[in-house]
Length: 447
Ligand code: TRP
Image (cartoon, rainbow, N blue to C red; front, side):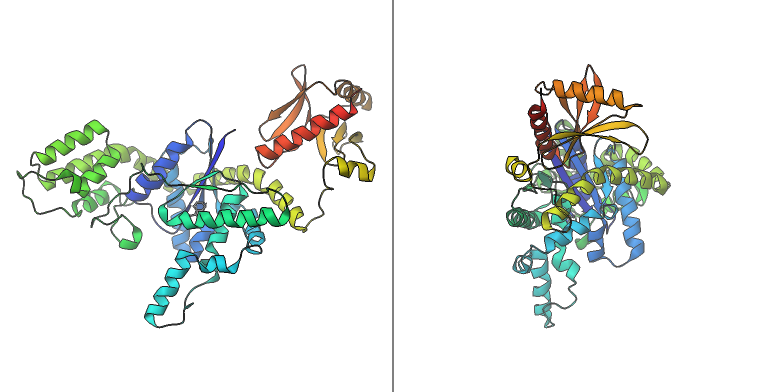
């Protein structure tokens, strides 16, 4: 079974070199690993929490999408989408909000930090704090639980949010009596580079010490690199590579051999000016071709939009049926009768085949479980006799296993022909459960 990895980036800023090396590049690499099913998205609902400038939100969405794609993300391989294209996410957020203890949110670091700042300033504790900021962790939980992600790679500042997502998932599972949600695990990549910014502190928009990734072109990148702080050692004096921010950044892009050579040059007395030029050259080798793709994408926002729409479609294939199941779980929609033998006995119903004429005029049949759930739907036939013949064939073969999993659905295959199909499941576990029910139903009808 594949591991579902999910992460999002809030669309309120312009990606910088630190975002690329610390989050985007490792995520793209992870998405190419066998056995990984990656979900990467733009958290634009989250952007509204910190940013009320519509132009900034719109621009950032384009920049971040273009950065992922220019960096080599393959949207065919991963599910790459925009949060606000999935209306099931805010809907799930509400269901989760209704099971989340307010006290849990009171303990969120981001909220507490804002309260502390207000207290220090001598204003009302909740001054300027929106409900968006307060409930932020619930929206994030909805992002993750909607797709039943197993692993969520994030920065250290997000660890608490992942713990909250697990708490909320557990509470929902417990209240509604079934493991609807996978409990997600946080992944903190120790190996991944945390880049220093211009002043040597962690590169971050909030410290205003960033090196731009693509915006402003090679000139802006170079101008920023030239502003990285160094010590006052003169050309000819040996430099301490380990304590140099230039070297830390260089290493995050270079091979071990290249890094060793750069280090030797620093220790041999290379001047800081030359070292900065060497760093620029090394960065450009990786970034120049990506920047070209980035600029091309930025000039064609329609192309980005098409890719995002295709991604949303892929994501909603899972979100729509899962949300329907969750609506039933909480009682917003009539639940399918409880599955299982007991239910079958109570109503006196058993698994059965039901023939029908489809809207397209063809003749088909369904296999229904004892609870009335559709487990298979045959392909359409021009006349009822042909459909009947297939039905009898399936019935005769009942005990014999001709069902095969296909993606998140399954199919009945006879002599290499797909003759009937099972429903699309929300995830592999649900598909396996349905498949098991279908096998049981067929076995009970065999003969
Ligand atoms: N809160 C995350 C951040 O600021 C972004 C985010 C939103 C996210 N939803 C998510 C990350 C779901 C991982 C999973 O970095």
